[in-house]
Length: 190
Ligand code: AR6
Image (cartoon, rainbow, N blue to C red; front, top):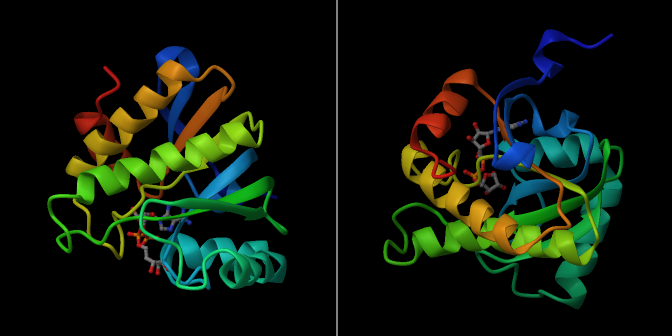
């Protein structure tokens, strides 16, 4: 039985259905890859990160630790993306990316947020993945205003899809209906 909080409601689609905006829980999305709004440690945290590790289980954390040890001993830089197993999540992979903390580097924060979307999608394409679900990166603990993040994120997704034909669906998942509403007001898809 699915509880009402687990039901995803589609709010709108763009780009001939390749972009789907919905209200739901990122950990309930049946897709090739879920994107995690991680931090540089890759060792978990609150918000999306906490939920993904909680549902994904120890396999996700184990791979994150291995990636830290072998590839990023100093942590994953902001804007970069790496992939791990999805453990018990209903996806094949988790793509972990680190969004910018709003206000810390004002001249670069929009580019860094765009990098998160671009690099996650490029990694998904390299892995031959069909569908990718994103949370609204940086708009929780990292404080990025939802209106600004909507413009930056949607532009980056649109630019990627214009030059890529292998990723069939990008899902943009918002926890609250009002967050999706703000996104739809400020998106750059149309
Ligand atoms: N499904 C979909 N969206 C969610 C969920 C969920 N289960 N939970 C929260 N959101 P945040 P950030 C929304 O804080 O701002 C962590 O501690 C939430 O409403 O998860 O990039 C990490 O370890 C918000 O709009 O990510 C980092 O230290 C959005 O997801 C730091 O927080 C992102 O909120 C990253 O902060």
